[in-house]
Amino acid sequence: MTVQQEQAIDLEALRARYRAERDRRLRPDGNDQYAPLAADRGAGDPWVRGDDDRAPVSDAVDALVVGGGFGGLVAAARFRDAGLERIRVVDAAGDLGGTWYWNRYPGVACDVESYIYLPLLEEVGVMPTRKYAPGEEIRRHAQAIGRRFDLYRDALFRTEVTSLAWDDEAARWTVRTNRGDVVSARYVVISSGPFNRPKLPGIPGIDDFRGHTFHTSRWDYDHTGTDLERLADRRVAVIGTGATAIQVVPHLARTAEQLLVVQRTPSSVDERGDRETDADWWESLEPGWQRTRRENFLALVDGRAAADDLVDDRWTDTAPVRGRRRAGEGREDPALAVELADAEKMTEIRARVDEIVADPGTADALKPWYRQMCKRPTFSDAYLQAFNRPNVTLLDTRGAGVERLTADGLVVDGVEHPVDTIVLATGFELGADPATRAGVDIRGRGGLPLAEYWADGLRTFHGWVSRGFPNLFHLGSTQNAASPNFAHVLEVQAEHVAGVVAEAQRRGDVLVEPTAAAEDRWVATIRERAVDMQDFQAQCTPGYYNFEGRPRRRSEQFGGGPVEFHEVLADWRAHGDHDEVFTSR
Ligand code: NDP
Image (cartoon, rainbow, N blue to C red; front, side, top):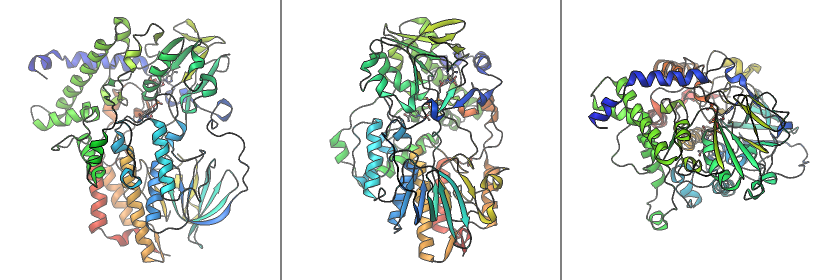
């Protein structure tokens, strides 16, 4: 940024503008404004046909994995490598893939580069076709992992785990499901993912609408046609403008007779730069390339210096990454440096809207007025362009959302807009307590519920195991560290857990359970190193990042970030006191 540009940024004015945007979006009902997508409103599985009348299973396995997404799959694959014989993946879906199983809306694709996002590419021997692979290809990759590690043999699909109870005598978990199964498992992994519960906006009159509605994670291809050809004579509305809508809108824009994009808060939309994979480049990659590339990306998004930017996309150019770089230059107070970098980035994002969107009023309404990490950044080279089409209209609700639905359409600011089809790109329930996130009743030693053990905050050793809950492992966001490349952090967690299980197998008669001292030490580290995000989040427009405008003071994340967290795990594996995670039976 030039000196002139820096001087042109009036931080006080910008802060006031951001506050005004936040204020018009804040509402008293917070998370209660949403309703879960219930079975009778289309929460069922559109990707399986017919009943699945299997008899309940009653048997014993070495490991049971709750969740067939990438976290669970990598854990199961590494258990296989560790020599476990019977590994049972259980998932509500009809097949493997997790979020990629459910989300099959037109345009679905990863927006973290596929070469670093897709796990085990080298082992499975797959070349993604594009820099950002389509969802269908990602789903097929999950299935390929399942076949490669023989995970289909014992899997139970269309099945939800309902309870886990520790049986001290047998030193095993008794696992029950909604299909009447009772499985005894030596080890259990929970990797249920953050985005498994679609939510609906609690809009009055939602049941009055006589047209057709569905949620993006349950795309109704019977209604739209495979290529959306049945929308050619329909007036379609999309409610929501988050990461999902950004991918869907260009497809609906090309096919619907009329498309109304109903916006409450605009996303920040940066350049995407998708392209086909260069097969020669792919052939030239040396073994171990994926780990190197992932770690390079992780370091850069964690604000660390690296000789090269191997991925070279806009994730390594977000406001916080720029901010940390600028703070490192020591030109001004670090907080000011971060804020100035943010202002610069968001100025560019808003300028990009003006460059692409022809109609000035529409362009203005599409500009995000908040700091970039208030909401998940998005990347598209087709979303903003869609608003230049004559059949596409932005219906900006100026933070208010849809007022109500009627039999014939939706009402915004007192005006009724008739539509035939409403696509709900309204996201997923988040922020639920991790102890109950998977909807599983978990009881450890002495019948103690995990929800009770964690009532005053999480208690884990390194995020993956808790005292009193032997041989039960958590993957996801539990006292560890996250990154935009969530598949990478899940893989590191899964490999760590499987490594400890391999050692438990070698030791023989032991349980994987941390000592009280080890757990206390990690909980203290989490508290001491916690980064207080409350002040930042309180300035943000509401969304799931700040619990709909009610940020929490206490973070359960490791404050040192993902690179340091991975070093903590590696260091423990190399030099730690391994006795502190094993107890004898
Ligand atoms: P989000 O929660 O991000 O977006 C929901 C959208 O619905 C928001 O724009 C929200 O507005 C809007 N909304 C909710 N209620 C109303 C209402 N009453 N009236 C009008 N608008 C309303 O969900 P997404 O499904 O888009 O994304 C969820 C997450 O999934 C992402 O953050 C991302 O992590 C992941 N994802 C990743 C992708 C990838 O490529 N890797 C692709 C898609 C999703 P407001 O912002 O005002 O609340």
